[in-house]
Amino acid sequence: MNTLTAELRRIAPVRDIVNRVRSLDWGRISGDLGAQGCTVIEKLVSVDECDALARLYSRDDIFRSRVVMEHHGFGRGEYKYFSYPLPGVVSELRTSIYPQLVPIANRWNEAMGVDARYPAKHADFIKRCHHAGQLRPTPLLLQYGSGDYNCLHQDLYGEHVFPIQITILLSEPGRDFTGGEFVLTEQRPRMQSRPEVVPLKQGDAVAFAVHHRPVQGARGIYRVNLRHGVSRLRSGHRHTVGIIFHDAT
Image (tube, rainbow, N blue to C red):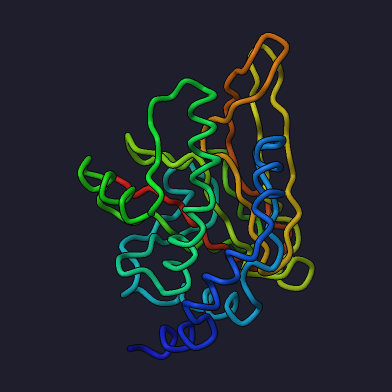
């Protein structure tokens, strides 16, 4: 076991993460997601965990690929996709948060007339992804420097898409960087896009809709389309972890 992996296991024991996730106010989280398409989960990750996760970026052996955003027109900055097995804290957050989001995801699909329903356990959903050829893990570590940004986008990756994902800020605004706000846009039918800037502190997470979510209108429920990104950093460096619950083709 390498030093950084051992450090993560020491500062983020599995039982601690599971209990932390269970203790969250999931009624409030569900309500916020339904009303706004996003919600902030404060202090999901400790400062020590944030620092240890950010230091992983210098490693190559735990990642399956590196993407320089400017080369693909995605923005500026870069990110790396973790390979399996995922670092313990990332894996445990992924598997313990997923069951809490399943009732919301299934309720959304029912409201939008989408046939797909999600199993209670994340392992069963990953089996579904793998049977469809979506074999590559999608959790990722992102790194931004001064002038970097992430264009508005959706993390879909294949036929099977879990409709909610999590991003965790590992750096402290004002100390480590300025600018670099998390941004969402929501496009409603025959209306202009609604922007949402989500303020985060180190260790905070934002849960948000990946693609579509249902909205109650005067004539019934309709789908709205969401995209997310990061505004331009004015200075410093910013790291985040993205936890996506489906795998990629």
